[in-house]
Length: 131
Image (cartoon, rainbow, N blue to C red; front, side):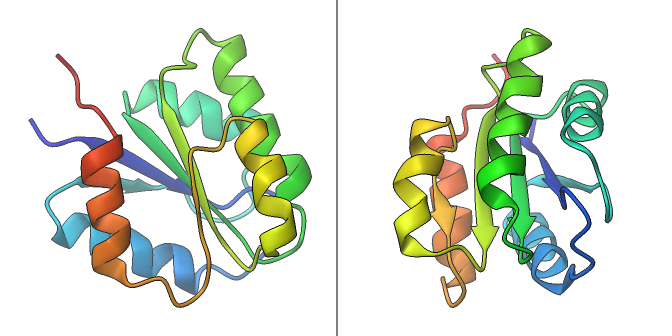
């Protein structure tokens, strides 16, 4: 059974080209991918993750709200007894913010220019499937 990955755009950021590219790359690498669309709240993302029974959530941000919204997704998942879902992120995120995001429970951050096969390999190595 292929691992299921939710790709989500939290907040008011309306730029989703990168998220769609990642969704397609992961799909092409053999993962089952759900794209939740633009303007999702952290609560909506967590609820979709549960409804879709995903193994991981990939968050995309270009708006600068990543320091607030990414940790809120982790918190919302924990509040729903779903802290086992791996959360990773990407987008235009300053290197200086990455340690804070790691501390908040974000497994990794991919910055612009990361090769798509590297992202798929990371997901393959770091997202356990259902037993």
